[in-house]
Image (cartoon, rainbow, N blue to C red; front, side):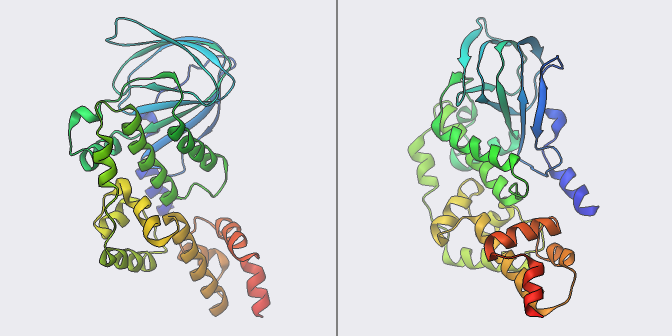
Length: 309
């Protein structure tokens, strides 16, 4: 219960996101609500033709067309003219933070909305673009292709669809990568060379040792990207990328491998319940441990223990 309360407290506040109009044919299919995702909220909905005004929220939103298509006309408050475009699979629109919008949707698209927490974008502007507020202004788009944003969005969609793949560290890394790429692609006056330079500095050997020791000591905890970056004295915006450059594997995979190794050790050395071992090695449940263990070890925890006997 305490862990569930912690996750609910720290996850993205769903009330701070837009809602598709509650009309016949509009149907929410998936969302990240209750998953403990802190810096982004994601929903997937199938829509029919609709028109409505949508009130402002504090967080920037990317709308990615998963399937189907729709002709869309949109007007952002404060703009004299409306925009019109065809949204088709693989194309993006966006909803600016802090602005009322009027919409007319003609078609039947399946759309994924990805909200990036405002404080995350501010953090990236501060760490990557020297805190220049002009660089945090994101131009609104409608019916545009952004290949790198698409790759990241598809990874988010896969994490949302696949049970057990929405690990906090993995989603944290995706959220930071999305924030950085959004500012690269859509930010006003971003200096790409400056940002790329910020991501090239390697983690020191001392910093890496601190991170490795911290991970091993805290395997039973809900590790966060921000906490690990702080231990390494490195920018969270680029930490996951620098970690992979240093170790040859992603941060998420490294932590998962260490958790599996610890679980194997406990399974062979004790008779503790598998559910307890799952909790002691940072897995959200026994089934989460079982699926990860089978993937890494080729057998279930129970089979390993029976073989020992």
